[in-house]
Length: 165
Image (cartoon, rainbow, N blue to C red; front, side, top):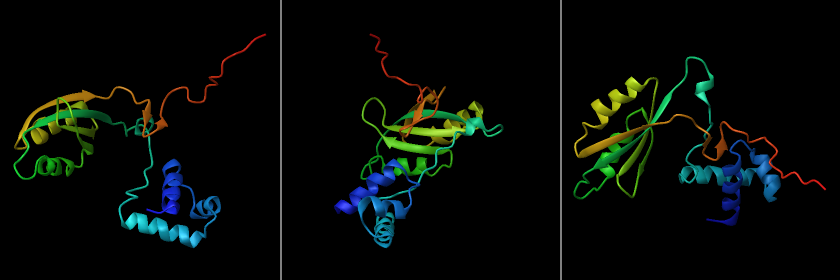
């Protein structure tokens, strides 16, 4: 990976909406070269996507419930956790899936319109997968920060210390 590619990635990681022209000016490159390198990084799946973070709970009728599910599984000979993980991540309700160290094996984040919908997903789909030993569900009550972005809080509050003579 070249320094130019690393610099482009750092800029895009900070703000994925920045234009190729702006990146080119910052890095003293041509816009054409920036576009070429970005396309290459996309083709190599180094750049996987350009996320937009939307707070659906602020839009009436679009509210969602998020649950984090701890899943214990029995790994399969020859494939370990990969085959079970693939079965799980193919469900559209699944927002993220991670192999974990510790007391459980997989961490599954799912989204639904109601707690009932999430409960049905866990009991009818997730828990019935062969080699799933147990599940533990945790419901998100409030989101303060997501992917480095403060969602709800006092991010604009002046936190400087008051110094008086």
